[in-house]
Length: 534
Image 1 (cartoon, rainbow, N blue to C red):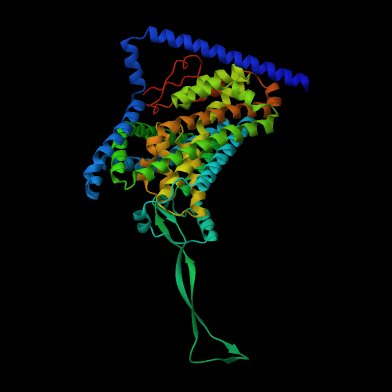
Image 2: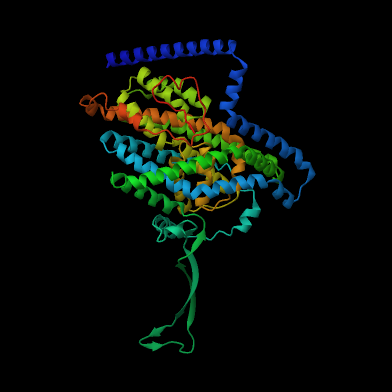
């Protein structure tokens, strides 16, 4: 035991020395870059980060413009005209919800099945699925306990007359929506139990004698009847897409034509999303400005956004500091914080770039050099994790959707909350790797339960900051997953060819739709290239 503690302390010291040396070398390189900076370097920086700069500028200009227009007391019609460019952005994103959700899930599940056929793949998928579900649960519990969005929009609550549905009917509706009888109808409608009155005539008989023969008592009772509401049945499409993707993956050569079709469809949709995202700064500018002009009480809304930000940060910290290290300790019986200390460089890079793909080379380097994780594990687990592990994003989406419902004083039942959790998990997986994934998945989640998508404006102002925390949480989850999978697969790794794992990265295709990404100086330090070409 003493020897083990000594080894851990020595490993911690060596890890800290490596981190200190890495920080010093980065400082020297940064100083040299600043000293040798030219106009072309500045131009290249703005070119690579044009989208981020434009988005931040749009948020700032939108806030300033909104406050500047408030004294003019614009009418409701004038505000709608002014916000029209932002409305177009929301309509464009809603247009892509259906094809994006179906094509990305089918493509991802079909490709995953061939890679996750072994024990290592199954362990990785189980870990990522478990942590994502836990993250969604944490987000929902946090937003329900803290309740950051106290209802303030009476207009919406008056328009949306919420019909009380029993818990049993809500749960049965959830299962019914998982298996829609008509996939075409599922693209536009969801099943929802409604209630109708039924009059029951009651007569009393005593010893076969009718009491009061000329009168009978009438009792009204409410009975459940089939009904529907407008909106995409995202839950049914998710279940169908997952099952369809698994079947295609198992069909091998026979299913290759279908895989090629959905791959092509997915890439086309992703390219279209990337093009629309270049219009996003304009739409965001007018959405934010219009929402500020429309608000009656700015201080109340500011307080809600502040509490919302605190709620998201608390949820992410609980998942990153308590849940993930606890899982690592329970499974490996090793100190999780020693393992995390070797990942500081990757976590800082994720916080700075807000891009999992740009951080991937640093994550490889930290795991393989600092934490001595087998390359066969990192080359397999990290690419898979970049596809399906979105702990921070799933937590954020579920929390944000319920926050918007709270702001609108919209009472969600158990079935709707469960729908949000499932849709947030599936949408975060399906939209992984695309620009502004948070904005796209938020539209999907809100659409699944019929919440207003224009209220996304409420959280866009703080999304750029929270997005960095989500990315850091995602990278931490990927890395801890690699450590756990290596521990569980240690016996198989001893009997496996060391070169087996190197082929996994080569199978990963470069996605040409990733038009908007953050590059960094480390992308060329590892064989895995994250640059995308159009």
